[in-house]
Image 1 (cartoon, rainbow, N blue to C red):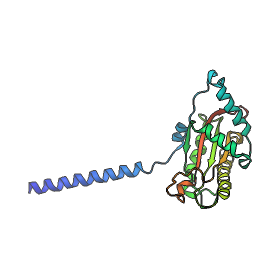
Image 2 (cartoon, rainbow, N blue to C red):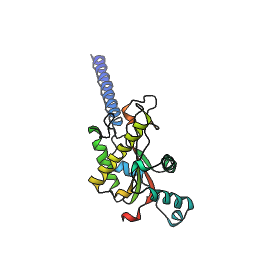
Image 3 (cartoon, one colour):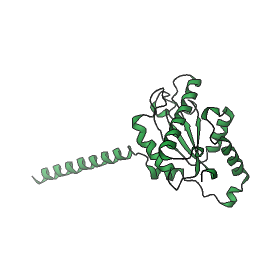
Image 4 (tube, helix red, strand yellow):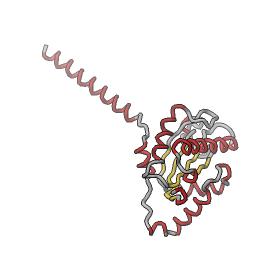
Length: 209
């Protein structure tokens, strides 16, 4: 009798532990980026006098300023490549904002992520910084079509942020990379490839202040 009770007691403990582990894994696998997480990812270095006087920083600032208020499709391939090189070491976050297939329309499931992005970029901790919003497509279809689609996706995000969170247009640089930077190259048609990446250029837009 005692051994039977002990046996069922151990079984109950094991089941409880298994359920607890399952719940913990479910929570860990379902982390949604919120405003504070985005801010932490995108926070840049404080701009000191020595940093602002750095020749490389000045060159970057000149280039960034030349792109302000430019239309996405007006960027040449050389400018896109230069912008990509400049942002590689900058604070960035891949929001994985999903779009409808062959469309620049934000998918319903990704609207909360876009809203959290808007809350973060309009926060005083990030306000005044210049961000690159880059659009990406999946690997299905031709290069020209996907390049145009990625540019429209970047424009869609910028327009939403400007219209709904009153972020200065000059603080958001948009660029499209088509299907050249697949998130999941082993599955080129996967939805995760249809996304937007946001990078803090660590350049202040003095005109927006």
